[in-house]
Amino acid sequence: MTYLYAGLLGLALAVTVRIGLPGLPLLLAVAVVFAVRALRRRDQDLEPRNDVERWIFGTYANWALYNYEYVPDNILVPNYDSTPILLGGRRGPYNSVEQRQYFLNMLDSPWDIHSKRELLETVEYMSTGPGFQRCLTKADQAWELCRCTQLLAVAFRLGWISRQDMVRRSCRVGKLIQKTFSGWQEMSESFLARCLQWMEDPSLGADMRRAIHRALWLRPDSPYNLPWDLPLD
Image 1 (cartoon, rainbow, N blue to C red):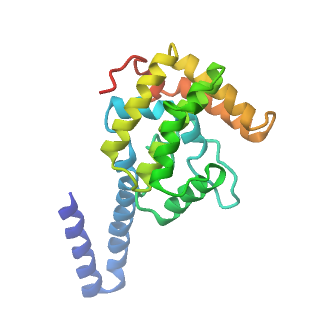
Image 2 (image 1 turned 135 degrees about the vertical axis):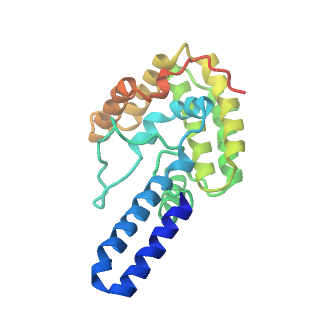
């Protein structure tokens, strides 16, 4: 298909040079095809490739859809029914300078994380260390564990770890999540409860989180449709 597009572009350029402006519509049409194809491919490498990756996404889906994209005035667009499911939440491309800076800013505040080492240490602290061990409620446990897979997705998007390493580490956390909660409902509702507390409900952000929670149960492509006890190997 790539060769076909290249051939069409070459033909369009030749026609434009040969006959002038009458060939311009053909050149523009081919340019549009290239643009649409580029936009479609922009996110393909960030889409979950299998059920394991989709399951992992489900553990931080509320955060991912909330942080998907901002409009210029920094207001979230509530299109949760159709927001793409992408690893790390944000749209591509994978090496986008803008998105990379977004993730670096996020890690800086409120996480105070500035390196791969600090991020992985934080994941360990919240999953198998004191961060999780000191949890007193299901809401606290969900808040710690689900943000671990979130951070690992961010590490992948920054290029700090490979996709394979992200999946391996996320599966390790995912098994803890499976043991801690009875299913998607308990996990998602526990996470939402702690999230609303963190966002100082009532607030616009809290209302958006509730809307995302509802949308995730209604979407036909929701990771919540996957078996809770899906083998994470």
